Amino acid sequence: MKIKGIELKRIGIPLKKPFKTALRTVNFAESIIIILKTDDERIGYGEAPPTPVITGDTNGAIISAIKDSIEKLLIGEEIENMERIMWKLNGAIVRNTSARAAVDMAVYDLFGKLYKTPVYRLLGGYRDRVETDITISVNQPEEMKEDALKFIKEGFTALKMKVGIDSQKDFERVKAVREVVGYDVKIRLDANQGWQPKEAVRVIRRLEDSGFDIELVEQPVEAFDIDGLKFVTENVETPIMADESIFSPYDAFKILKLRAADLINIKLMKCGGIHNALKIIAIAEACGVECMLGSMIESKLSVTAAAHLACAKRNITRFDLDTALLLAEDPVVGGVKAEAPVLIIPNRPGLGIERINGLKDV
Ligand SMILES: [Mg+2]
Image (cartoon, rainbow, N blue to C red):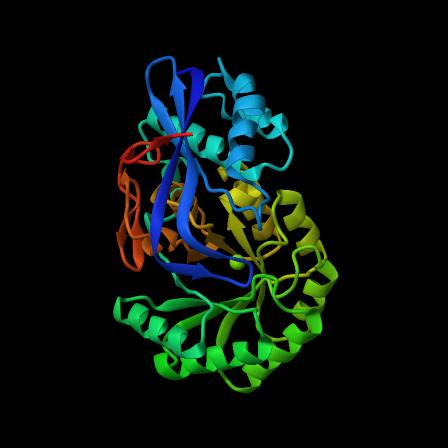
């Protein structure tokens, strides 16, 4: 099973409701879909959503990274030589993590098909299903309260509230949601870099003093501000999770060496795919630090790849894989099955994707 070439397509899917964070508002999910072809007529699927404000990757950059830098190095490579392919893929281009993640997951898809085994079993096989949280976009407290109630009625038991726009208002947002959902529901906060370090300490302590029982706070300060992240981690009791501050395995090592965060949010689009994510998971486990597996606004294709990884490893203890549930349509046939809030991996080789409808030319 030798790599013959990479075909690129694109896909666009409307969201049920605008996705709003401290960094951006998204109405429409768009991605580059890659179809990795082999000499024995097999295909592997991969996906790269452009997320310019987080990864710096745009549609054009993803296409160019794959076509100009990655594809030519992989043609002729045997799928079973995983380490060699990954070494070439990650050496082909720096940054451009979304493009590398798309190719990485397509290689794993084919690797699973080669051995007729679901990817999560090849990677570890710890479980075959996970329970995802659900994201509440940052809006007025009243609207966030209504969203929270709707999700609880749908069966979700963990809410991820987007905050980070105005810390005074953020307190009101959390108060409104906690008061209406009660204390059996987990609430995680994601400030998406929106607070200053001292501001973050002030608002998190206020939430602690109010007894709102916040499970964790994700990325309180700007991605580059590792000192600020460490300051927050050391000055509150609530666990602090690094998201935008950690892309690569080295970033994870650096932050954990400094004890600048208590938890890590891994996303395939930040680290460049499953191969690099496995290294971050190992570094974190060696440090006694648990990981969450998250995603960008993506279709069910790359969420399926993330879910395979999430199911493979014991040290991934939190799951933020709700984005396919936020989309108004699902053009991906096969892959992970959602019985909200539970995502179940089908017993099919590779990623288990059957086909993708509505693909357009790039
Ligand atoms: Mg985040």
